[in-house]
Length: 143
Picture 1 (cartoon, rainbow, N blue to C red):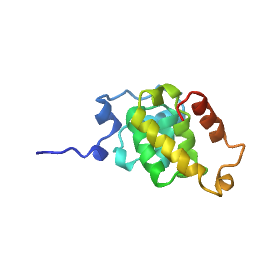
Picture 2 (picture 1 turned 30 degrees about the vertical axis):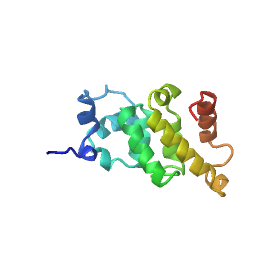
Picture 3 (picture 1 turned 135 degrees about the horizontal axis):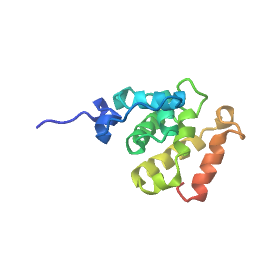
Picture 4 (picture 1 turned 90 degrees about the horizontal axis):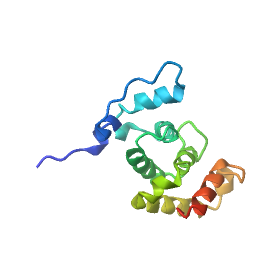
């Protein structure tokens, strides 16, 4: 029996869709997201996932991989500030989380783990935008 290594697949493979190049004048982030659609999922790190999440690219595939990285390091950031990946992930609209209960449960567990860290304020000060995102998700009864 043959098995498929999902980590070796790209977003284009998983979506079954090859998109045209973004139009001239599209943002650098839009062009980067387009190129990242051709990268195997396993090769996507925190920085790449941050870009894809902010562009709302293939959330059904990107969010679970981002959750996997955050389960290993809740403050995963790549070249961004600590918590950058979680910031992008929690910026996804509540509607996504309503339709993905397994991913929602994983996000809750990550937030609980992170909240239990005694030095959390060192990495995520009170004015960090992530707190606003988390409040929004709590209000929407996602968390």
